Image (cartoon, rainbow, N blue to C red; front, top):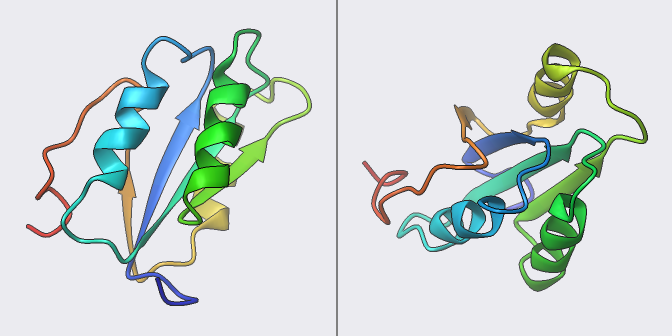
Length: 105
């Protein structure tokens, strides 16, 4: 990955432990690899943060932002968008799975 990725993917999250791991894995398995995945955990009360931090240690494309307190959905989305560095931006849900060619297309 270059220092400025082609695509920034923004994933706001809150209490997503049941689904976020598979959602992240579907993005990491993309055929197009020049992206950053920005995940902002909005002070989840489940293990969302632990899952995200564990995956971030395994893949440098993941940027984890952990809010110290719940800042509300709008501010969490805004913080993700402000952190983006890519030429293009895509939103992702912490509960969706993406086909491996989604970004390439």
